[in-house]
Image (cartoon, rainbow, N blue to C red):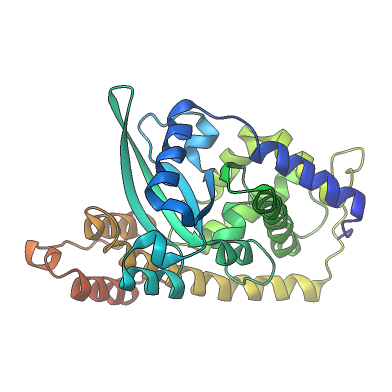
Length: 313
């Protein structure tokens, strides 16, 4: 693949910066203000992403935020939660606010600034963060210009990392659409998620101009037919397939562990974890009232049941 030069890298950053600094709908902005106040002075940044950002509405949906903090202890005000957040980031919480005589709900991931930025780059093997933030994201709050600069650089790195990790999976010449459909298909398969080719196609098609622009920013312009020459060798293609095989196992295992951890942070967390596991892996688990009263034991059982029934492959 053609390496990105300084000019194209700058172009990518400009695209990401324009997205990150764009406006959004009032409910999302109000929620960002609430989160900043809720988690306090340790908040360095708040990033809004996901289906509500793409749809420009929260109707019938959960807003998705990453809250970036300097200190887990100060943000979470709970020693055990802070330890789990450091060991297996992020911690995920449910929040809701009243807005214009209705309730707005959100899924909020709390993570340290350093762990978030590390997760966006090529040093991180699993795709959870860099693939998620190769999609559009909005910086709702940054404490200062330096934090904003680092976040924009990180979001640009997420795009580049996703392209680098997934482009060798393609065989022969390809379009920007081919590249990003393959990328999202591979990353969805590396998590406990039900989405496949159809979801990847939907994501790319609804914002094709954006994906063509960021591909051009990294690889340069395509040929007259909108195609790029594939320079990955057979050995590199096989290496990429092998890496994604291990990435799927690691990613699904970490996702399952995070879901179990969510049992302690989400309102109705155990039921949420069971629903998510069934929806994403097809493994159906029924909880009794007694199990709901013992979240630690039940959480461990959920993980092992998911493994035993083939939910993690």
